[in-house]
Length: 108
Image 1 (cartoon, rainbow, N blue to C red):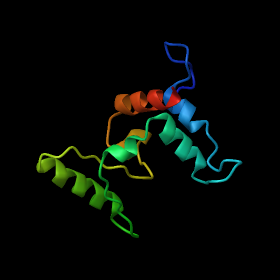
Image 2: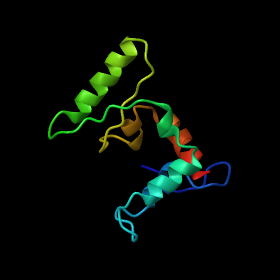
Image 3: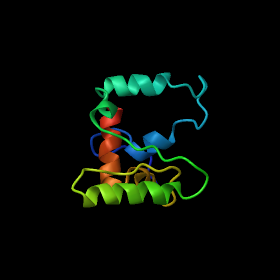
């Protein structure tokens, strides 16, 4: 399970912090919150090319296969998939520690 206890630095556990957000925010699901976050992070999405996989079946497999093929060609590549099965870190193709580090950056 996920701990809601503060981390050693006295801050909330990053995963507990993420899970505390309501699934359906009161202000709606608009893009403004994401735009503010991307601005705060210096627009990292502008520094890389992306492949957006859509459809009804096989999206996770396709995204991970595309990322693996790009890595095999010597490119830096990863896949983001949603939803996750075992843990949030799966969405970013990382491990729990890498995911926590990413959340800590977003938490500021």
